[in-house]
Length: 130
Length: 130
DNA sequence: ATAGAAGATAACGTTAACGTAAAGGTAAGA
DNA sequence: TCTTACCTTTACGTTAACGTTATCTTCTAT
Image (cartoon, rainbow over all chains, first blue to last red; front, side, top):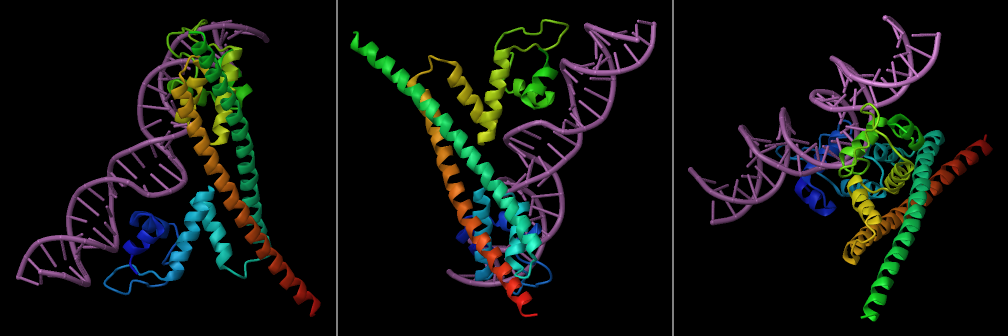
């Protein structure tokens, strides 16, 4: 499969894929040729999976830099505990921050809804008085 | 109070404050002079509160642009229902996205922890066999 | 043989939210 | 009066994550 099809499947642009490659997140990791046909990039199913992993990690809110760290760990089965725990630490920090955000948002939403209800009430009163 | 003190209280830099002013989020909204002393910006307690509102909305993850919209609505008591509901809509969308993020993160964290537990288990076995 | 679709590289452009440096004005204390 | 701390405006710099040309190949279909 070539870059266009991969892009379609992952709902990203080809530019994005080339950019990820440039960052070392995707394809041509070390020395793989994977340019079988006439200079065209070639991708396999594992590449599709890897790209999906990247986009889902992005959706969570991780930077491409952090994603690189996480992916390295997932691929290197023999990564030491130290490294794994560092990554876990990073994710837990991110989770805590997300938790905090959600709490603040819920608080704020409640405030706003009160606000709206109040205005709506006022309007109703006004109509009744006509 | 001058810009330096406001910055300290809000834990931001003076540059940030001037930038917010430039965007119309803070101070010199319309025609207020508020340059009483020798060309120095002057701030009151309400400015402190407004800046705190801005930073807390930022922490939630809103862009400065969105924050502007929200603040306009909070200040203009007479804003119409239409506008308020638009803002509420925006915040609800943001909340849903945040909810999704948190769910994905929790899923991923669980995966990672299993991963770590497995490796740790393997290591323990290995030690036992010596 | 040629037109068109898809790819390749190279490089400049873009947005957000400030950082940073330059060059100078002001106020308060020793 | 001089230093020092704080302030002013102006303007160029920075990071992330791509977007957008531009120019050149390659492959497929007619």
